[in-house]
Structures are given as structure tokens and as C-alpha cells.
Length: 148
Image (cartoon, rainbow, N blue to C red; front, side):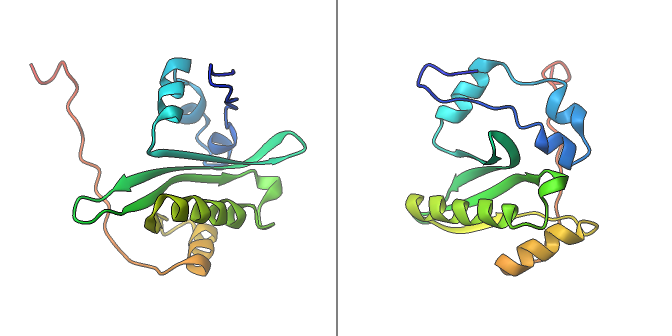
């Protein structure tokens, strides 16, 4: 799909395959207008690693502007590399590019969550940054019908 501003959007099925969660990343794809708005926004960052016109890796991140100082943080929401291309520096290259983008935007840090069973991700992030152990909580948002 091509947006009016000339950007080409490739659907990164590599995320669903890498996370073994094809349904989440493929079953209910966003409408083109939603994607255009997301990509036109200032806070969403999408990077793709491409080899011979095929997407082999991707990174989705969000810039979070801080209120206490005029600076921002960047959160890596998803990072995936196709199985056949892992352990070849693709993920590191994506993060290095994100560091460059972050520096341009005035960010002071990039942070990412890694779950304990994901040893390769933990090894990658340990190589690139400082580990901080935290707890993560998902707080559900009530549906509009349950609020009535």
C-alpha cells in the first residue's frame, strides 16, 4: 500500500513469525487510514531491515516525551528478526539505527522489556545497555459497554 505522501508500508509479518503469534500480528490488520495516522505522528518509529527486497527484521518504537525536563525516552515495543537471519547482527543494526534516530530527536535513553525465558534477547540487550530489573503490570481498560 502507498500513502499519499509517498511512503510505502510493508506489512511486517516477521513479527508474528518471530513471536510465534501470527494471529495477533496478522488476523486483524489495521485499516490503511489508521496506519497513515500512526506513521504520520511524531512519536512512532518504525525501522525495517531489508535484504534483496525482503523484510528480514523490524523494530517498532515509541518516543515518550517527558514532563519533568525537555527530553524524551524511546521505548522499543517490538523487535524481531526472521529465524534464518538471526545471530548475524540484524537486531544490533536496528538498535544502532534507533540510537541515531534517538540522538536526532534529543532522547537521552532507549529502554526495552525482555522476558526472563528469552535468553537471546537478554544477551543482546545486555551487550548494548545496562540491565534494570523491574516488575511489569498490565492494568485492563474497561470496554465502553462495561462502563455504562
